[in-house]
Length: 192
Image 1 (tube, rainbow, N blue to C red):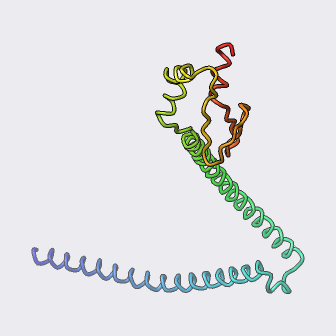
Image 2: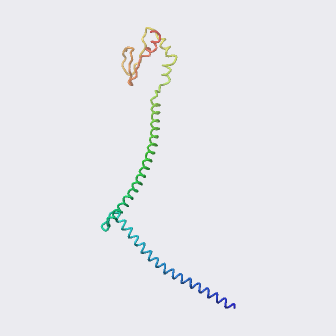
Image 3: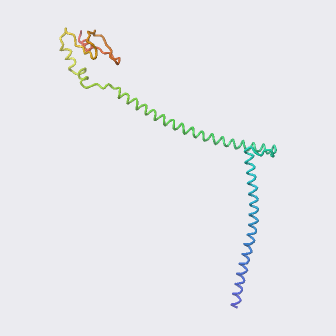
């Protein structure tokens, strides 16, 4: 009995393996047929795509009917609308970016102009020596003028020119500033 059951198991396994092998062979034959069909289908699709590409490029139009030409024209117009919409979108983005850069450069330019103006103000500020301020505005300026005898004319400093008796009216220096004698300012306030 034991021999019989082991023999049955061996036969069962043999049948299972032989059945599985037959299935694999049948699948291989089917797959080869499927691969042939798939190849032919893909080959036809490639040929159609190549023909459409040539048609889109304006080639091989002689074999097309009027309806096919109208359909092709409509497809090209639709594609052109999409292309123009994308181009306009990209140009709009580019313009916005350039406007943003322009504003940033304008702000930077305004800051630089402001800095230049401030520097010019600092450079144009009169840099007078301290003794000049003391001489003109200090307490000794009026005492110097008052200590002169009343009948004597005040001395006049003439730098770089010949000595001449000049009237006390205003004179101009090389920069266009009026130079008046010192005593004309101070004497007017003392009743002269």
